[in-house]
Image (cartoon, rainbow, N blue to C red; front, side, top):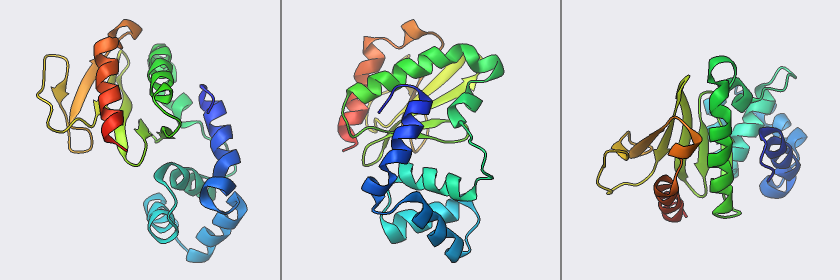
Length: 181
């Protein structure tokens, strides 16, 4: 998968038939026939009834509900006052992709999920000066940097600059990745 969001989207679009068993046009027809309109309901249909993985289900649902406009969720997250955080986001994604070919990048409206069989990290531009990197590290003791977070990501690291994404944080990301498969 390419490193830019545009490359990632193009790769996912090209892989829909191979990874899901059907071209996008077939999925859109299935969704139209179902009568479902809400994103969450469409995700549930695709994942539970058709076995589509979360990232592809999310993309297909977005395309099925789309107005024909291409929406770059990542660009929207890092627009305006959060633009300076984009290089940090890119470094996190590049590192995550280096961990294995099974890493799936799943942009959402306000965050980007990093997944294999399940989510292992969540990148959220929390403020105009900080990314919250959620990590699935259940059972790890919190530290000054590795804070207790929420149920999806048990821990969080606050990152304000590229140098904050150091070897210690990369080690936690790698550990979370190793637990996700």
